[in-house]
Image 1 (cartoon, rainbow, N blue to C red):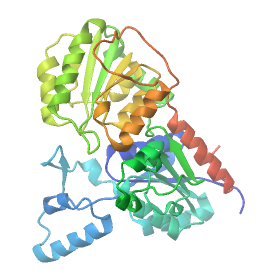
Image 2 (image 1 turned 90 degrees about the horizontal axis):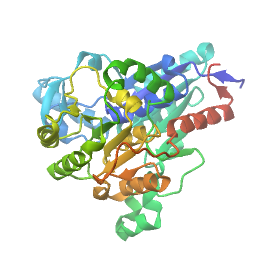
Image 3 (image 1 turned 180 degrees about the vertical axis):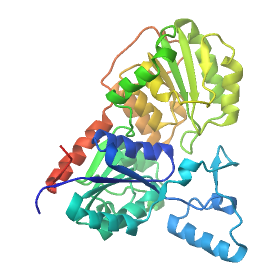
Image 4 (image 1 turned 120 degrees about the vertical axis):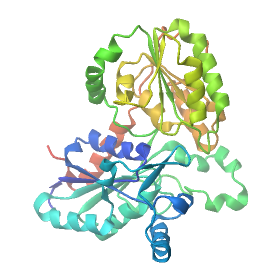
Length: 398
């Protein structure tokens, strides 16, 4: 087969910003954003469906079809945010195409002779069955990249990109924490194969060009603030990094300690931040003259913060937020790492060993900077994709 050029990119998302951002970041690093089309795996929403998110998507949809046959289609289109609070899906989300493996495989087959091969990039547990099925249906016409470890049968994909800490269960420390009877059920069970690309953290879109654009866009609002500018990114508790109001109280106390060394402080919350956490931070810091807390309205300043901050404080729960901050080369302080368990503790250990983060103690002088070799996972992963495509005789547009 002669050398072929990638002309189409299909991103398979699951609706989770953290997962889809990794796909967009990789495609951006490959210079293919103008060729991408987003398809999304859509689960049934509302009512009892919120208790069935652990099921495979195909089984979940079958059960929903049975429910509709019995009770009728009475549930509105909804999404869940912050626990049980429901809100209608925005129009732009409703317009996104639903991922269908047969449809995407057919498009890839039909376009191959005219346009060349297609690249499929997916991330998240719900996307595994779709991307692997596309590969099975159109193996000669697509190159599939699965971001995040698919747990089993990695040969279903052309390339797998996953953090090193996903292999923590295979370490001697990880093995000691797994009961002997459960070891056969904990994945991964084998060392990384040749087509597995290991990263330190998560992929993202915050490359140098994106930060330059953000610096220009947010210049009038952020560049003129008193320096140094400290950005505080607050995530939310997870199964392996649990916290509540205790961390919020600790964070606000430590921030008040270092306020004299700051010119300005900007605070942002994520979609996962519990109201009880954000409420405490607003109550303790909201009226301080040096502090401004983003209220969630208007354009999201996140990229502007990454571009123009002098230093960061990030809660330990978010691999994505830490990965972005640690790619800037600016000081990154972490709060709550001691609360993380399992592979996420291993992730924080790797960041500390590389010198890219320091624990937030409240004794820092934010005006004193320090440097390190920034994380460059997205660019390095893109290079591995290009290399794997070349081995197949395929390339990117020149």
